[in-house]
Length: 161
Image (cartoon, rainbow, N blue to C red; front, side, top):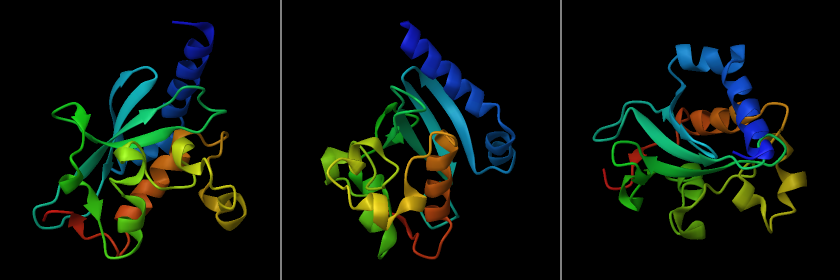
């Protein structure tokens, strides 16, 4: 592993040891599933909905961590592959705008904190400053946004439910 990959991985592991991350784990908001650096699979809990999972997996691409934003792709934890579009979370307004399988071929979420989605959206820096990647907060910045999206009234479960 190169020195830059090693440093990024060490910073990520440091963030997983913070009280903020650990509290999220203990409270059941999120958990680390697996890691094959620079990819890390995390699960984020979702409210109970008919025929929908209790949590969704995300595969984070973490090259350049913390200084470079991560990118998250919905992930099938059991199958260890990208989540099929019909199993993506949705909702009538906000979630369907963020969880868009057609956006960049399902490789990321349509969020300002996502490395791939911020490209070409310079206006997001002024429109959504609270949604941007914050290196000092690291992965928690992204996990909190996903968790909050699932735990608002717009979340209705999976697309095909």
